[in-house]
Amino acid sequence: MASSMSFPYRIIDLTHTLNESIPSWTGSCGFHQEVKLDYDLTTSDVSFRVQQLKLHAGIGTHIDAPAHCSIGKATVEQLDLNSLIAPCVTIDVSAQAHEHYSVSLDDLALFEKIYGAIEPNSFVLIRTGWDQFWNQPERYHNNFLFPSVSKEAAEFLLQRNIVGLGIDTLSPDRPESGYPVHATLLGAEKYIVENVANSASLPPTGSFILALPIKTRYGTEAPMRLAGLIPTA
Ligand SMILES: [Zn+2]
Image (tube, rainbow, N blue to C red; front, side, top):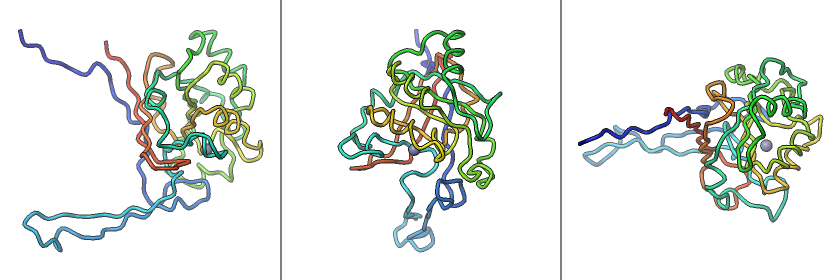
């Protein structure tokens, strides 16, 4: 008997769309998309539009490879797909998050009390709700004030042996705190994903992440397509 195969997951796009005016660390995302050849100028029967891209590597929804902070650590092309495709835990602090907020040990303890211990090799996604400002670049940047993650929380997540950490802000570190989350996680060969979109769509546990950066040699950061998979069965 014929059966129709359906993909047993709902797919969530967790990626912001790149364009010239999106928020970025420096205030200028450096995105430039130029048409090098256009349909009506094509000389063949089939017409084409050919484009050239220029952008900062750390643009939009992107990955920080371990090499972002120190020489000798893994670069983007060396990241193992087995760590980039992983179970996902989504910790929602949006009810209490604000521009000076740092995810604390208490936040993680409360999460684990309700949902159980964070499993090894999970990707942990922090949802702060800050992506509501994505379309207001100055508000989103906010002079480097946005919800982030404490050093203690990063160290705890490292003890849980997560594969990586994602957040819906410019960074899990505010410059004022130094960069302890980057130092802790990247120093331990974990990766970081910044500027995550649509994390409200993910459940606390039971989903999966596809964190797929473009594969650049010697890349320390790279733009990516980030997707969530929620089992439907
Ligand atoms: Zn970063």
